[in-house]
Image (tube, rainbow, N blue to C red; front, side, top):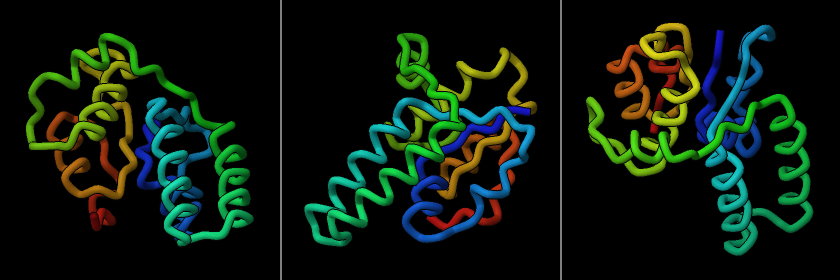
Length: 144
């Protein structure tokens, strides 16, 4: 089974202590778009500049992210992903969410969305992924 992680799950784990990430099955192949690394860097930069976290705390979170990310396949934002993201989706999504879902589509075999779980805490993202045939185990947990 493949598990696609959206940034929201990783952020909740690292910044809020949410343990959902620990529930990913041990035998799952876990991946995320290169966007995960970009979004993490941007969020940590904002928390530092807005004085939400001190520099030492940001360094600790970065180190925790590096450890966590070592187990996540970094999926490319290639031309096919970008073209897919330009297209239509069953529900209205923001740009980053369309890039995440397009990356997941590129990673899964054509017609096999039911073999991949999408892990996100974003309700609209979950609803769209479900409408596309992905398994969405966090749909009832989605709050954003």
